[in-house]
Length: 116
Image (cartoon, rainbow, N blue to C red; front, side, top):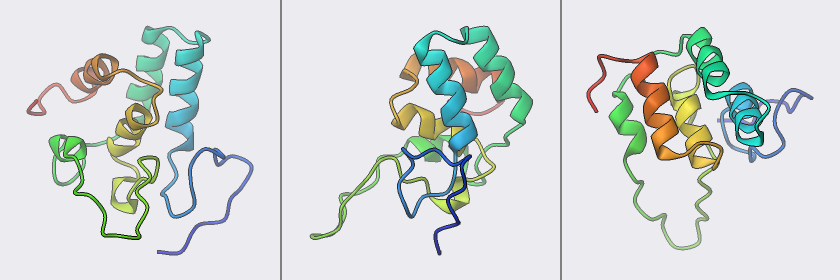
């Protein structure tokens, strides 16, 4: 899929070839920097109303197989089918802006009926 134009709102940490998760990354970064409390972060995450990924949120945590020789793996590249789903929040975990425990707390609040 072609790279969408990089506007000023797209976070420069997100590499080319990735779907955009700038808004979620910005909030998680503010939280990690101490500018937001966890409650404020959670309120922002819940306000997005992101649905589970169509394959289930557990799918987001499956480790990908190693890429073929010569292909570089970048954990900051979000697949396009994750856009506008809970995958955007999962990407903030992979970007190092949330701990696994924080991610799980947010997930439990947003999708209480999702299998864990």
